[in-house]
Length: 204
Image (cartoon, rainbow, N blue to C red; front, side):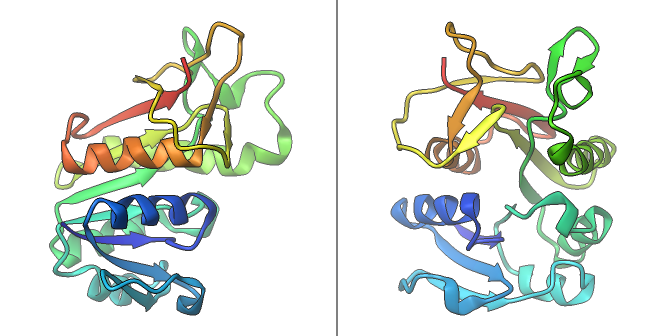
């Protein structure tokens, strides 16, 4: 596929980029500093401002799908969604957050008593983005939430998928690596199973 990856040089974005290239996709990496991206014959690096809707729409045009791997506090969600629509691209996959996942009936992780205050603004912005997408009927969107602990690690290919509930393993841990997350996101790109839905990933 022809895929535009916004935030291709970040912690998660760089793993998604590697996964896309290893599977044979053609990628346009949209970043602030194109020189930070690796060189590859199926990668075109483009400098872009994700909050400049008109400029971003121009960069996104002509792709089969868009993946957004940028921090929620760095992006205006209305502007990003607007750029995807103006570009005429129907599919949008978003690297989500864990904060909006439920930990008990009616209680989301971000609202739990022990949620770290330092991460709360980003988590709340992620929840707002998801709620905006849930009212979006023009785009074929997917929002993939990681587990609570989202860190560099190994590409194992062994994980579980869920929907709106935080995944916790038998040891009481909620964790996923950037590398395994990238597998699940590109799997969804290639074989859509969560159209206009949020899903989540974690170790069993």
